[in-house]
Image (cartoon, rainbow, N blue to C red):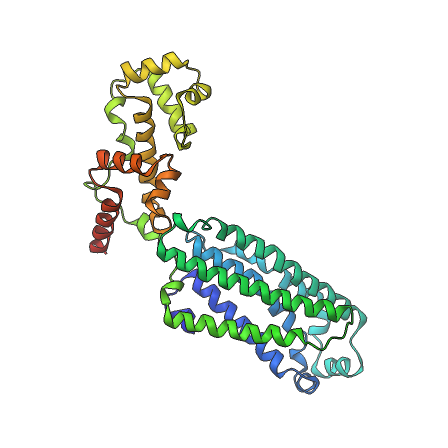
Length: 367
């Protein structure tokens, strides 16, 4: 309940709360299950497998919703839960039986088809673990370079890695138990005891973290940055960063600027004018003439103007919340922190960090 409502509700926390509810259900069933338990409650038999099928889809969706705030809960998410629907359909001949009929099967033996399909879904759960772990790794991999992300995000990434690796470790323990059970290998260690003990410990750890460090569960707030338009006195209009040389440029120069705008060669950190020649129909000499006579600028100054436009776009999307400013400058094509800061200061009138602080101050006042 705490995960659901404190911190504020968000798709990521709703998903995490659902996952913990699923974990709690499976632990409860495992602790209390016994032959006597299922004889007294035959309708609960075979219901643990569809619950376990929720483990990895919910883990992946939690990580996705947290790190990709633009993701929304939509009908497409239902595809992740198709195995559960298939399970319910496949086992419906058993599930719709009356209590007495189920009790008879539990005492005298389950149908052969039931055992075969149970094995199949055990294998599906194992495959789920592999697929969703890889998908989760893909999301976290973009934050692998800690020097490029903010300290606040570093803490969230570390927590998510702990969360994901704990899931994978528990999956490996549970998988070992399933494989040994299938092969009918008897060992002195009960892997399922370790699995459910680990699951309980993980839930307690997440609960402790939620009380101790609630910011770990605050979804990255990049959407509000996009909704709040920065004041005009703070932002250079991206369409007019290059206006000083657009006004009287020739038709050929306009074509060249259009090519640069469309193909974005400036994102390449070690860009040379020969690269511009190769993506356009203009010769090296022609481009030099347009830059000097038509646009009244140099090649590197022009590229840095376009790079600055890209930086402003990334800041407008809230990327500075996730990444450090030098990393944003590098992503925009600047080949050094010095050039990035100098160009930003020259064009905007503030350093990048000063601009962000002013922007955040104005945004907080507006709210």
